[in-house]
Length: 108
Image (cartoon, rainbow, N blue to C red):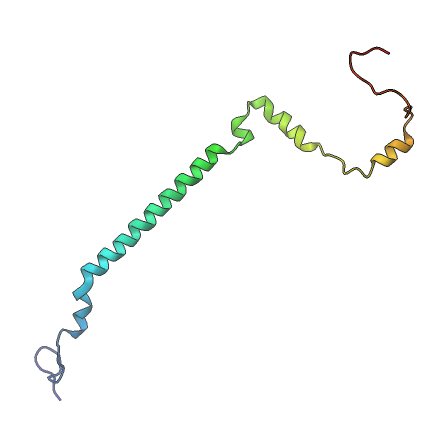
């Protein structure tokens, strides 16, 4: 069968079938645009939330005076014992276990 002058075969019902997707192009574009706007809105909200969170957090490098940063580094170097070494210290101690408790400002 020879094609007709428009390039479509005679028995094809709708010569514009390949272009039918364009019928709802405006609706599709509107839907995609709404989705993009919604995503942009969510991104802005998320960024604002992160910025508010940063303002609420205490960040020593930002919030402390310069001299305090060195003090804080020294404090980070300290560690609290877990109590296992206390028995060793007590066994080697020269202190009198029967002595009265020390109270500052009181003379005995």
